[in-house]
Length: 182
Image (cartoon, rainbow, N blue to C red; front, side):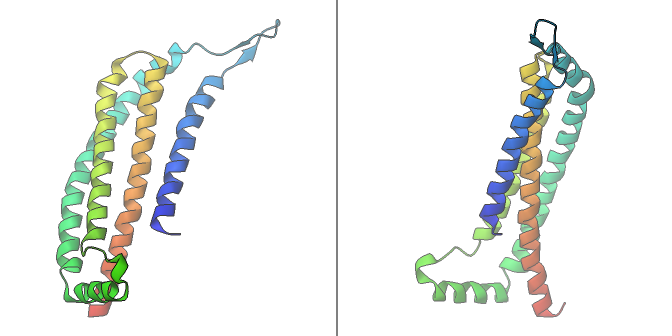
């Protein structure tokens, strides 16, 4: 499975989860009265449950994750550039690939830029999630609670996608380490 397929699969799964959670949450405690009228639980319980049990944990978790990803981004991008993209072997492979495919030439640092961009997007989503918990999360309404949880779910899937991109880049790095005999 190529990288774009994995990304579309992760986006599709995140959208399915993002739509499934509110639907299941809404119909969780539905009952039918003797007249046949369907009634569901009071929507204010969603907001109160979210504010008392979820909001604080999401804030602290995603704030910590965002800070960790900032340091990880700097470390991984600089290390990958130094150890892989600046190496003679990589430059030779890059030149040979561009000679074989002159119409589809790629920049030497394209995959490193993709890694950097993906990590940046993930950092933005994690910090957005933390900020939404302390701003929007203070509003006691069920739709706001669902929105804040949805932002957290999207941030999780962005993190999973970042892990895939990091793994692909580390595989390239390990391949070059094996060629060098280290």
